[in-house]
Length: 80
Image (cartoon, rainbow, N blue to C red):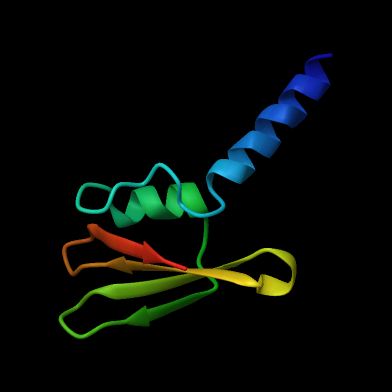
């Protein structure tokens, strides 16, 4: 019983972090993003010192989310 509850919690936590649901552009930070979505597959610098972090999801990476973080480390938006 205890093991099944832990497994269910882990599955739900994985689903919540799939697309960054719960992150709020303008107030969430890059640390919040990494804590929620994990390590990005690709990280690119943007003009002005910001970053673009890519998170491929789904079977064979069929859904990819791109998170844009400004130079001060604040999440601007997440695109699919």
